Image 1 (cartoon, one colour):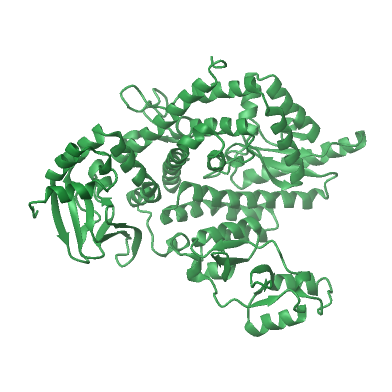
Image 2 (cartoon, rainbow, N blue to C red):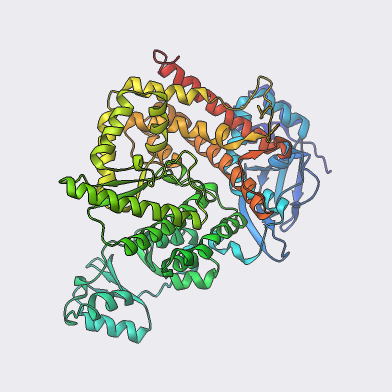
Length: 639
């Protein structure tokens, strides 16, 4: 290694402007400066190579820039992860974990780096909290995004072209020469333009040239031809005004999610609020043949529950696809939730076809992990049914017969599609959970007024409900009732606080993991009960305190940032920690499924890398810290 006599004052001045070195005092900066070496890398030099021995130094860029990338199994295929510039550092993950270098670090310009040796760097991490916080926080997001890369390589998942949905920006596939017209254009003229230009949609703009609507070939078929509408009418009479938009810099994954959720085939692309293009489902299918869109299209086309079974079996392959892409856990659960929702709705549609029109309005709700949109692979059925209060005895009898038959059909249909029944029988097929709105309101009132152990268990399970099918106003009425009940209910919230603090994170006095002591999973760590559940419980408590209507843990954290002092202080750390544990759980379960085993939530800590262990322990210590704050907050109600 080429060592140079460094000009101490210049080096100290440089470090004094670079995070986290700027937190050191003058004597410490001088000590670091004396221990630095310097290296020059011509443009194009691979400074650290993927798969090589661990780095023995942290490198701080003095001048130039570095590209961080990973090579797939197809050597010509490079995945760019990040760029580092002057003042940034690299080599942290490999240095602290002692594991092989996970990425290529290449000089994109002639680059000069200061090198700080491993021993002194680790001493700084141990002795200075700001160092630990900076490097863990600055790398944890990238780690969450990339952690799948290590796990994928370990299990030989990485593929080639499948990553396109998560690495291609919307603007790269959008049709940019968008055809527009005004709302006063006759329908006949708009149809002629679409036919002449051979396009499937036309954007309607206002006087400022901003998009205000869209008409598609499907609109022409359904709203004009089938309805016998006069083609001289203006297109504003048939355009869709609830425009679904994405930003040009979003990834194509975002479009897939919106198309699935809103059952549309065209999405408008904007850049800084201005129309920049349009993307169709055909564009996405051309980009990625084996996509979630093709699966949802398959689900929609089925006319029997038996026909849904092959489609439902493809959901696991979608998880595998997203793992290959290196997607975040939250991205995976969002897509899987939308697909599972579509499948459940289809079973309900088939049920209505079989039993006829329902006697009154009803709403199918889901709760638990399904209600929080945190499902990964198919978990137990957790659902219920709310129907309108009957007007008389005859209607009540008709409702009972119809909804009993419908809920049993849905239960059995979902079982056929791979969704096991709930061991606790928390399903709409249980008469207790298939009730009129008034009964549901009485349930909620009773649970809050008399918080017995059973009532509390019902509360933490069902209060995470969300509507999935039918008349959503019934669920909204129940949610409003819950919000009104919870005002000034400190005793009930105190009971929830007790539940939240008594599930302690699995960390012992010596910072070792607390594992199962006996049984089938002896010496293993339960990621669901001991890892995820404490996060879900404390965030649910805070959400109910503030009357937050969102049900997903991450959405609750985002909404609570500006409303709740504890969440406001720890929001970013909570989000990162939750994502990390979810990602480890998904990878663990997918590995089991891919080898023919039944997925569970138990991992062997010995199989984790040193960085994974460190980050998980940091996550557990975070939740322990928040549990202490809850004890202080509810000290008069904690027992």
